[in-house]
Picture 1 (cartoon, rainbow, N blue to C red):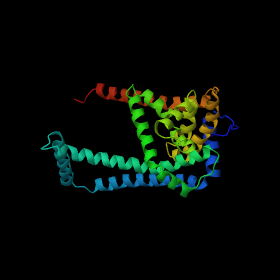
Picture 2 (picture 1 turned 180 degrees about the vertical axis):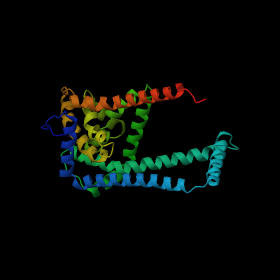
Picture 3 (picture 1 turned 135 degrees about the vertical axis):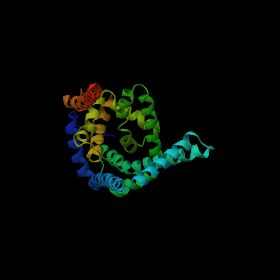
Picture 4 (picture 1 turned 60 degrees about the vertical axis):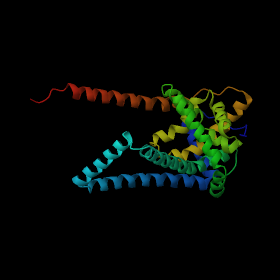
Length: 282
């Protein structure tokens, strides 16, 4: 369980900074791993874009037309199948690819949840034991995230917002998984209990630095931030004590992105309206 003498911090940026210090002090190999994983994903993304650009630039008009015909033929086979195989095969292939990506992503991400669980209970974490533990408990870990995805999706059917709220309520499930040994729904329920009446502090603490870095620092700040949140929320939750109000900066972390999205949508609406109403040349 979390230490009871952890001072409560509701400034979201300090949650991230304090968590980062703890991450590098008590789990330095995993902190380096998070940086390497982030760099690898950036390089892979840039490489993918570069390959797409180079490939597209080298395609002749006849080759491009042939590719379009193949794509159209594949769509027609799917919409007007000669047999069940024409429908099942592409769907099964896509499901297998997506599932493989999810498994790979969770193997990479699970190490960070392991680090968060160790830090949350005041323990150090090493890279080798992290991979060994994640692989040893991977079926249960995968199942927990399957349940989380399904529940968030079902909540999202209620006009999206409830899904966003519950996704944040479940954000400590991975930490709970490794800190308390809870599995499946028990880990999700524990996370929801921990973040109850502290949703905004949880949101700001986990995502403030990620939003500032446009997502590039997400892996680096996540373990320390979630561990810090667990350590200060668990004693209050277990004692039935109220949680302090959210810091004004957490409100800003929530509202500024919403304002940016709203302004972007308004700009696009105005742009399309201007284009639609602009007089055409005679």
